[in-house]
Length: 435
Image (tube, rainbow, N blue to C red):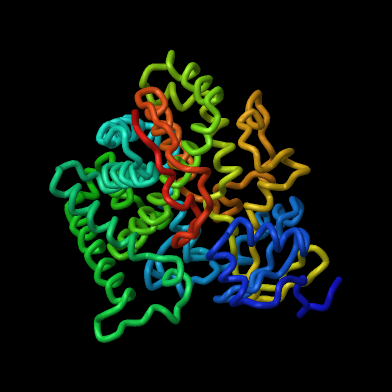
């Protein structure tokens, strides 16, 4: 056992590591892992993080008592997401929020949104102009946002759809990686600057959400997720107040909009580079028609989505803040330290995934699926992504609709990875040409 105050070794310069990550997130993390092993301390602006990628260490982190941790960098994210966001809560408040929010994202309720996902994909993809390059990720963002507004907010009229989409799109565009991470940049200058603009946009989106909440009758809930949240009650019979619902809805938008679009863009980038695989997937999907439930059961489609999320994890490092000392890998990490499971390094470990940089969906066929601590695209433990089933279902339906009904070609070299507000994704948005 090392000294209680000693952290694992790692790079020294927080400034340099932050700049390297912003320029090349995948390469910088892999380089540190090669030099320092599967347990190291990563210094970054905003606080050092002890990073683990060995299966035993990852299992220990995600199986620890939930009250061992608090969210990492919560002070920086709270002015954007709100203190009541499920992503920033811990302890009893976090458990209550998850229980209230969970039902709409599972089972029959979640599958009921399949037709909306298919129809939105069909409409937006049909609007893509032919014979000129278009970043397909932008199209997927529009689809994802449309699905969110229709399923979560229950908005259906064209005017309200346009207003919600415009407000959310502008807010997300202003929500960059630096302003989302560093509290020092969250300052207004007499009403000017990026932070002031983001705050104005947030206020507009919150006003739209409050209007939608006010239109709901808890005694007569609709099928949309907002109506279900308004009607939800905890064990004591208490409902979420308006501010809670606003913050949880905005969290859903931030967490679900960019991530699904990015995963779909990576899937298209990989599939269009393997025509035989794409043809085989189209052949498997064609007899299933356009029924969302049947399409979602395709084994090869499931494997393609699983391999996409393995090779291109949207959040490379899932971080927490320790509330108490925690033993890991021979170190007793002190309370207050940052601790993270590196999904990127877990997913690229050669002993677990031969030829880890190759896109090989067959890894996930014929019942082959790695244990949870070796495959974590949605995180793990008590803070695993609430919308994981919803996101995966949407990914399958949109991708199947594209493959069955549209012909695309890549218009650029393989995409490199860049940093967004809270995720990583393909630089340039994967340009394609529709034929």
